[in-house]
Image (cartoon, rainbow, N blue to C red; front, side):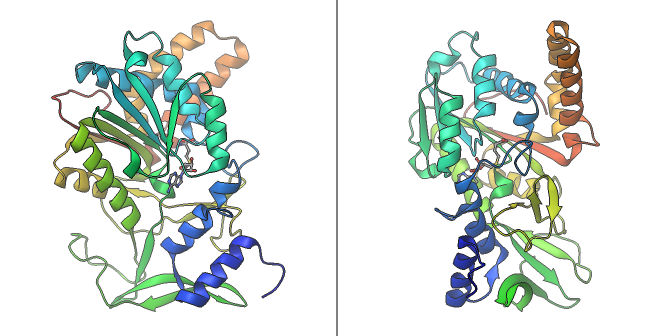
Length: 359
Ligand code: SAH
């Protein structure tokens, strides 16, 4: 093989040699999560110099609203004296830092909370450690090690979209799986399958070239979240780009330095994500017996929580430049031309009768 291939490309090639063409899920798993050469393992992908920006990185207001939401849920749960606050995929730790700052003066909240972070990337773990240096933090590789006994409140912003999906394409008569093979270079391939990926999904009859995305990893993760919440009581809030009704569509995207690139053109250098099927997540939670708080757009959720009032309070104390930044951030987080509609929110709970804000 040519010397010009990166380490991650070499890993992909040897996987293909052993197991045949890669389902997209396997491709994403290796490219993003390979323990040594994976995209998230090697770098901090956020910000102007990175590949993408997330809501907590746009403005402290985002994490602050989530913090106030959490404090309200904690109160409605009867202010448990001990609880686990678990964030999945905390990135730079910015959202958790904002949550902890805004809840500092809520009596009893900080004494009760125990911060747990689910993170596989060593680079990002060290960023999180720095961002949360005044706080005791436990890290986890998977949900399995999150131990029981006290209520657990889980938050996940732009986490599910990084978990791998498979894609199927309808050729007019049957479904085939989109895979990646290696011949001179990485190339797309459609492979026949011997099952119906749309089975029992209640979708309309597909037209030619329709794409269906399915994620065993996301389903598995949601099931595991539900198991923990049912075991220990608690709640979860999931925010991500995605769709509220099940449907077709190719949503796989590669982002490199804030630009969309072809999936196979910047392997290992671009972030890979696919939109989250919120209807499916809620189905899973519902089947497990959790209470569904509801679904909303990010813009609707933040406005219901009072982000405009929060912004105007910050504006009163701000200088001219800061004021402009706050206005811009508010627009980016909530407006339908920006993140307001594309991003969705779902919340679930178990073990307390509550009336959650935001939905
Ligand atoms: N929530 C942050 C970061 C989003 S990026 C923000 O909004 O800014 C996705 C995060 O999930 C990163 O921290 C990444 O390292 C982590 N991650 C991705 N796949 C993961 C997995 N399988 N297990 C644990 N963490 C994962």
